[in-house]
Length: 279
Length: 268
Image (cartoon, rainbow over all chains, first blue to last red; front, side):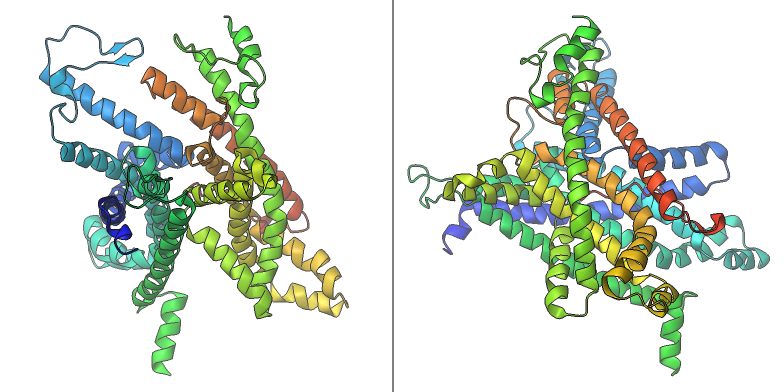
């Protein structure tokens, strides 16, 4: 059993667990950054900037997410190749869309056709991260926008009356206070992001789902030292348990974080904490 | 083929009626709109049935979770945790392979491995768990005064639940439940993208959209069509749930009524 679980393919499976964790570790801050930019843009007093922020939030949230994942990958890929084609091969005369084909010159292929395998994998991973960041950025922009609106008006007015510029008010008063309002929404989003990671499978990254299917399938003695029947059910059960545990741990960590953030805030939870310490 | 002929040939293609062969080249806009629309039949089928069945189970689960008896509470809590805590995508895969192995045990389980029943069951359980959590939250926030008033009128047990608790629970839960309905319909697109096989190219809207995107290398036509269909469907859902919401709130003065706020996010 120990031998079976450490075959090279199983090692790949464990690597893909790390891939998922890595994806979460990169995407969560990236999405937060996109969201922060989107929310700040939506709040902006310059009308066009505000329209861009609002438009970003509205468009991404309205469309079924899976469609977005499928659409974005091809669109991004083709967009990058198109731009590279325009700059790298200016004297290419044939049209790019030939009927049903998308043709760019060799030098514009992304990644280059002769690139090693790991470049292809990294490129696919990067596209996946970008897609996740864009989609979840819109969700978190919405949450952060709401949180910014929820900071009591009096706090901002006080900052203004102290003579702070709008920029100072934003960074020194609004941003430190908004997190406690944003956290319930963001933790919800984190759960959703976590549960969206199997969709990597759709983006063509060799992820958990791929390996579970690959390893669980029927193995005949001819091709492997460890023949077995159809075990895919058990592999997916293991995945299910993995995600459940992950959810549980996140719940606990987020609850702690919430207690931490509520400390000294003018909210019900913060007030309750203050009373408890005084009593 | 003219557009009318295309519609005649392909409008019911997703349930196996009409032209058998899908168009292979020179895709017209009309073909794409018709076939993707035809696929929506499946999305609506899964969504509506799972929603109706899930509503009943969700009420039971919510009451179970709010119960003080551990033997009722624990199973409901676990059910809700399992289905809300794991990705729907993985649930589809797991269920499919469970049904496949059950199929070997007894031929009774044959239809379960097909999407029309197997995926429906997964969606049913999933939406039941999510709705149960919403209903549970609503049960917890029923104003104390309403229950006390029911007690004062001598209503107990079933009649108190039927006349006071349940309508109030629905009224409080309805805005969140509307969102849940929208996500459920969005989630139906996952069915044929997870384990459940497409038989005879009879898939849902996303299946046909990705078919066209694969064949034409052009995602900019089929996916916006799909998006348009879903936005339309979402508007229909909002309209229907809005009517129900008005009915649930009809006894309240106009300014205290709950508006349905749309929070379109969440993948499962």
